[in-house]
Image 1: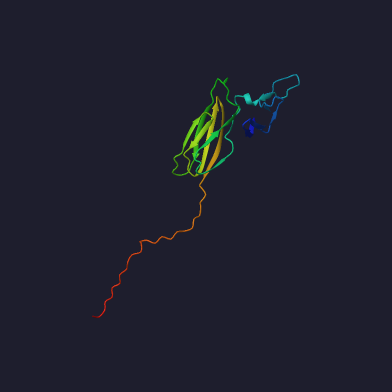
Image 2: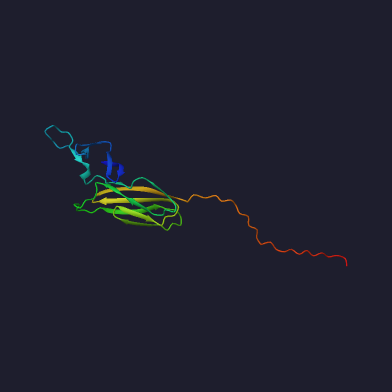
Length: 177
């Protein structure tokens, strides 16, 4: 099983989970938990290619959490899935995007196509987005937090306003006549 540890424009790097090892082809392999297959070397467990094992979970990554500064009110979320979808797959990958939390009175929209989503019309606050991926009986999920910060406040000196406008005051003097 491989955990994405670095994403870049050139691809990704991953580390094997504990209990797994990387073979000479670069695949993460683990010992089979079922009865070992007999071999010439004795009854040692036979390594299983986890990347192609139909019962292993999918590794889904949405990258790290994001911070946006208002007035930026749109962001794109790109997923990384291991094993990656290919044209040879007979069973399609199914993607289910959901918004787990968002600010009150929010009117944002989540447009998605496959492993890519765009969150639009954001207001300041915290959003939590989740992607669940299934491929046959393999499943995987990941969440990402997106924080949209309010624009910085600019302090201005106060301005005194006098209202109503100055009016003429007539004083009436009652005198003895």
